[in-house]
Image 1 (cartoon, rainbow over the protein chains, first blue to last red):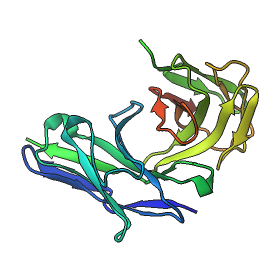
Image 2 (image 1 turned 90 degrees about the vertical axis):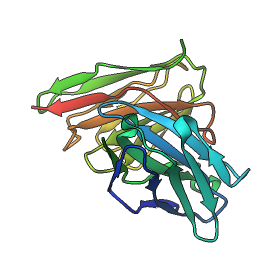
Image 3 (image 1 turned 180 degrees about the horizontal axis):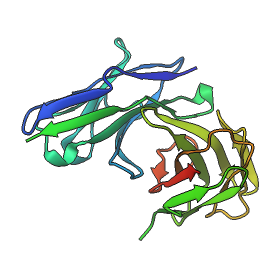
Image 4 (image 1 turned 90 degrees about the horizontal axis):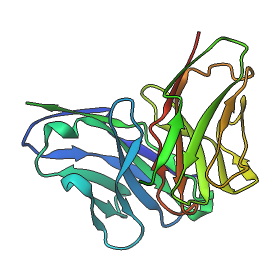
Length: 114
Length: 112
């Protein structure tokens, strides 16, 4: 079965510095991978998705992620953090051999210091 | 303005009571989902439906029930059989099972 591991439960950065949120996945087939963001007491919003096209995926709000099959990773990055980026981020994997069920990581809480 | 609505935003329940959470979408999506979110954890799938009048159990369906009588509506009932129902519940929809999911704002259920 596919699964996702988000390597950091909490990441803290200063405003204007780069953001790196790490995600490793396991999947028995070519996976689809997603990053979602959740602000407190809100629903989830899709940041970006990978579905076997270009390995470098650009999303909303300046975020991007790179699919690295050899490392089974899909890390999320942003060159310069903004205060509004403070939120919970979820890495998600799905594949057709697991009924396309989406498997969520436990989440990474991003704090942005002024 | 297309989207997914959930109501109520906050819900309080006494032990032994059933409660129903509403989820409506006007995105014309075929698939709908219910997830449960607990603090410090990712989302866990309760039920999903790919078409009207059909639904499937997810990973944690025990103590929950759903119906899909209309394409745009997918209500979730939390029954008294659910031992620990206090959680944040999220509804989502997608065009099909392989597409990205769009989420509602959530309902926070508290058992008193």
